[in-house]
Image (cartoon, rainbow, N blue to C red; front, side):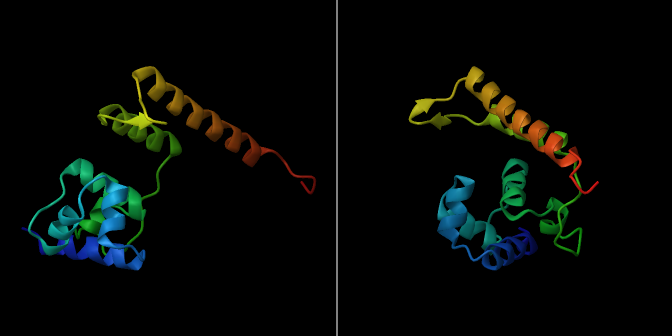
Length: 131
């Protein structure tokens, strides 16, 4: 097992001021699983690694020890939407206000996020009175 991955996860968690339980809640796993990751007794699979990167705003290269600096790669928002859509479609048992989230619901969530992003883009490009 790779203890370096566990050390990076522990470092990121502590720097974020999170407990193992808090991280576990955000990842949807048990605190003992987080502990096993940090101790190097278990490694996160690729989907879990993406979730960990998302929680801490870092790259998988940093966690895997391939990059020395802790900074996320520059990405287009459309790439993030595509990844979010893929992850959302793969999640089983998602609920919204206690009701199962259907395919149409997932589509509406993605569409709503895209609409807000389009509005933000429009506001960002809108010239100010000083221009």
